[in-house]
Picture 1: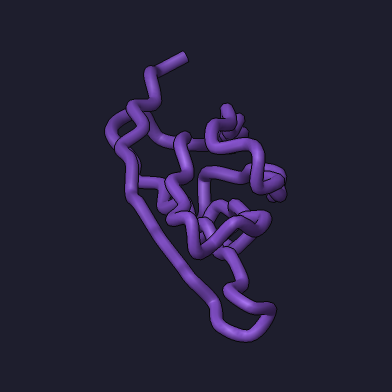
Picture 2: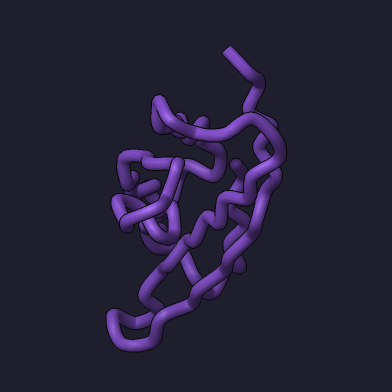
Length: 85
């Protein structure tokens, strides 16, 4: 994934998988904090053993706190194709 920041937001960004650990979610991922100097990261998704084959959606959210007060939030949804075992 790639996080783009404006020059007005030179702060760390917290990246999470939305719904991580919720019941019926087939995906999980470790949350990560990207320092201001890092704008790319490989987020590894773990897939539940009982996940059904096919296309599934995963939403990823990045949050940065502007001036420590205001949350700048961005989300994207990606398709993940799970193959049959």
